[in-house]
Length: 246
Ligand SMILES: C[S@@+](CC[C@H](N)C(=O)[O-])C[C@H]1O[C@@H](n2cnc3c(N)ncnc32)[C@H](O)[C@@H]1O
Image (cartoon, rainbow, N blue to C red):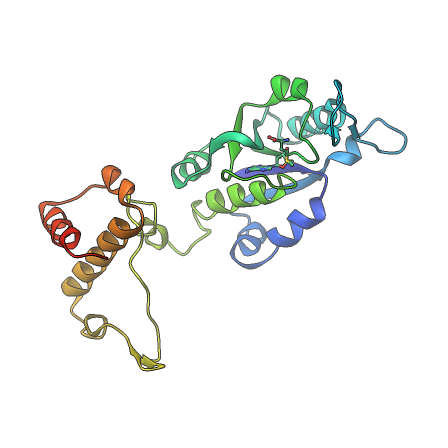
């Protein structure tokens, strides 16, 4: 999987992408995530990339030229036209399903980060394939969005996590929130680890985890259950839970 991030702040993105699991995966070559400074593609002698909006109003707008030059550079670098995603609060809201879609994409992906009031609409119309939002709020720039998208997709790529089972049971993978986790010590501040987890009885542990996931989802995100694959046993358990106030 190849991600290129076009941003005014490549050093901020790169600092974050160099640590922990994603940093290791990049160094080991499981994923490529490169950051590019839009300012470096400006044709202005002062490397200016923004200007005031036509029609008046507050704030500045990122102009089309440097962004387009950056896009063309990345196209040459990768030897093919990237799939361009503009991070925007007007985009479709990003989800785990979208993360899987991007992780499976064969084309390199270019994540375009806006700033100020946003990006000149003409370059969006010219190069952008889709707009993604990371939630219904407004950030100062697209960098956090690009990092969220790149991180969520990269961790699904082969080799990044030890194996697939690391994410198949996680929240949002099967329409459920994940069960709670516990580790040593067995008693902490008077709170005990649920006995079943110490029993070594794998079938009982599996059922306990399933029921915890079902109940948590019912209490916190009941709308998710509509998309979940539920057995008869799961449905019976949920009916019992629904009778007990959470
Ligand atoms: C201050 S915002 C611009 C908001 C724009 N004027 C609007 O009202 O839709 C600056 C940049 O931050 C990024 N951004 C802001 N909120 C975002 C969100 N929820 N998801 C993804 N990117 C976001 C976009 O790249 C945007 O161009």
